[in-house]
Structures are given as C-alpha cells and as structure tokens.
Image (cartoon, one colour):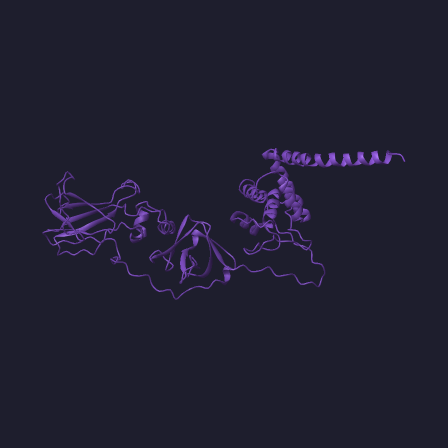
Length: 404
C-alpha cells in the first residue's frame, strides 16, 4: 500500500497548526494598530460611527466599532466627545449624531440631556428614559444637514385613520444655575434661609408666588422651600404650577425699619440728625474695605463743634469725643460690627440715628443701589440670595446739628 495519503494528511495537520499559532499574533497586531490611531483619526471614526448609527439604529454594531478605537471606556469617551461638540460646534449634524449615540448608550450628562430635549424630533428625552426618541423605523429622527437649526421632523402617519401618540408631559422641575442658591421659607429675601442648593441640582416645582418670580420646590425636607426664579432654569408643564397665596408673612426683623431713611425732626432736641448716608462702594474701599460710623457734629450755622461726646446705643461704654484722635474738626469715628448700631449725642437732648446695618438683607435696597453695590432691585435680590454682596463691610456717615 502507498504511504502518499499518509504524507498528505501530515502536511494538512502541520498547515492547520501553523495557522492557529499565527492567529493570536495577527489579533494583537490589529489591536495594536487601533491603539496607535491618532486623536484626530479616532475622533473622525467616532463621528462616522455615530452617523452610521443614526442611519441604521444598530447599537450593538456601534458598541463593537467603539471598542475597536482602542480607547479606555470608549462609551464614556464618546459622551465626552459629544459634550465637546455641543460646546464648540453647536447645532451641527455631527453634534446631533454624537448626542443620539450617547443617549442610546445610556450616558446622559446634564449637557447631553438639555441638548436632546431641545433638539429631539418627536419626543422629549425624559429623565427616566434609557433610549433616545425614535421614529416608526426605530431610529432617532436625524437632523436635516442643510438646516441652520435643529427643526423637528415629523414622521409620516402609517394610515389616514391612525391616532398619533401624544407627547408625554414632563413634570415641572427647576435646574439650579447659580453656584450656590439659597432656599428660603417664603418667596422673599426677608424670609430666613432654610437650605442651599448647588449648581446643576434638579428639584421638583410644587408652586409659584404671585407674579411668578419665586418657585416653591421640594428640597428633600419635611416642608417645601422657595428659590428665586431667575437663578434656576424651569422646565416641564409650568402652566399647571399653582399660585400659592396662603404664604405666612416673614418673621419680624429684630429692629423695626422706619418708613423713611431720616427720622422725623423733633425741634425740642438740642441736636438733630440732619443726614444719614451709606458710603459708596468706592468710598468704602470695596467689599473688603471699612466697617465704620463716621460722625460729624456742627452748630446751627454749620461750623464744626469739638469736644462733644457721642456714644453708641447698643454698646454704651463706647464713647468718642469730636475733634479728638486726629479725626478732624467736629468728627469722631466708631468701629461698626456685624449686628450694626445706633449713635446719639451725650450730655444734651439728642435724636438717635436709625439702625446703621451691615447685614445685606437689612439695608434698604434703594440705598444699596444709590451707593453702587448693585445696579437694580432684581440684581440686588440675586446677589443677596447668593451671599455675594459685602456682608459686614459697610460704613455710614451721620451728621448731628445743634438747633439752638
């Protein structure tokens, strides 16, 4: 019998063994090749993978192609790429495709979710959804390449008698925009702070103030709190938010505010308060500047009076004499601490100044605007709410005049 078939069989087995030994090296070579891709080439391929997914909706294929790019955590990497395209390129087809792929992968950052809500074609991406909006063919409606903005594209109805599925209504929520946002017990800065929220925090809206400038929100505590509306982005069914009218009044301040900055003159007093002024932010040296009460005492004709004793109401032992300590003719200076104070002339019948405050919320808004600490009432409220004014660093100028 010939041994030719036996030799052929041995040759075939040897060939298969060599092929199996070469396979791992070939596989490693492919991975190494992908790992050596430049950042620009990886980005280009990721954009193409997202564009292909927008056309065929094949998430398994997209995942496999992302794995082949040779980057660690490729799904998180493509989400970061989508965020960069949102920030740098804006409303482009590439951005749209990358966002669509990121949402399909379940990677929904704040930026991606906002973009998807603003530009999805037929259905908002709800906070509990794990898939992007799809048309009847199973894909998210692609962005028209020639459109300057991402306009919704309506999918054709299958038949003339079909009933369109209603768009789900999103519950009203507020997304905090400020770095730190105070939560108060009522819709005004006169209510105490009961909590704080940080940027990006999403809270449910349960009511609004009359005029709609404040939102009542569920801040995770036993009672709801209030936030200033201009410091948060409100979304959802805002038309259904009820107006809350049964809000208790704010608690009284420790010292009642007079209706006008200057007290009513009382002629019987030998010394009257003729001027009370909050120093401007420039005069005070900015928000890290002084915290003083500058007192000037003059006679009936307006000339400075030296040797007059002036004292603080809340710290009676602190007494100054005008013209002493090199403060100037008829002048005296007090330090002003965090609870404010009042001053009056001692040894004579004298009017007493109104409370000279150093806490932002206790200083009348018109005086803050007049002294240049904020440009308008809305901005004053915003800065007070964020604790971004000059708390405890304010100074006042007071003038006493002798009446006889």
